[in-house]
Image 1 (cartoon, rainbow, N blue to C red):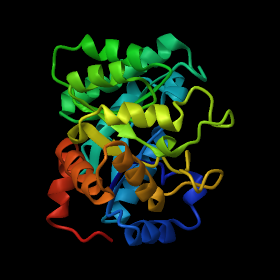
Image 2: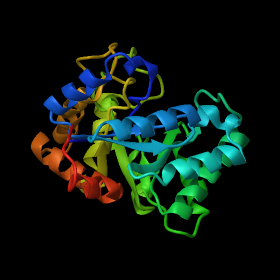
Image 3: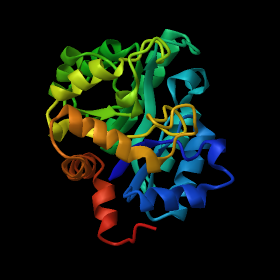
Image 4: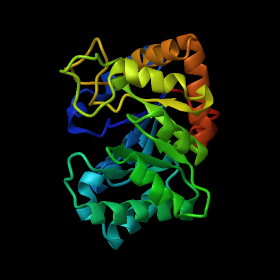
Length: 273
């Protein structure tokens, strides 16, 4: 299995990262992408990727931090992105739920990330909380082909199809295991609804992720999430598509290797740990 979205660069993992990665490998997670969310964490993501054979990095600035993006930021991201084990630009995108950065600044930063991805020929990892359609409309403004993933997808079937038609993948996280109770996170599709959306998505356009340390799947809700919990996501996706978790492991791993080409190339030369 490939965990296509982790934040192992989060301070919550600072004291036991070796153990976290060993547990992931024991659970069948052989590769994981560590996503930057600001400049410092992007450097840390690259450092982790260099330390662990099974880890790869994505570099970018989360929309919450869009106000920090300037020409120097993009220059540093560009240099980082050229390193051997960096496989994507991100986490970038839009967040209209928390609005921690003004919309115009989020839009500008997202566009700068898109342009960097085009320049380097790399995929994008896109955050779209309450902003999926807006993010898609921005992407449509670019004639140049762009690939990537709408990570932690929580919208409807119609948007999912538009995203796929644009050449992007759909990232499914632990939210697919969430209950229908009112206690489930606000503005996140509840389990039956998200499973219904997933059931309409072609398997060859799905990626699976934990988004750890956030969004721990049932039965680990309320705990720190980690890549070892990815099988719970795979199981839920398998149920939605009426197939087996083993099939989802194979298909989504192939999808990840297709999108993040460096992962597949590196696998031919490295051991998992």
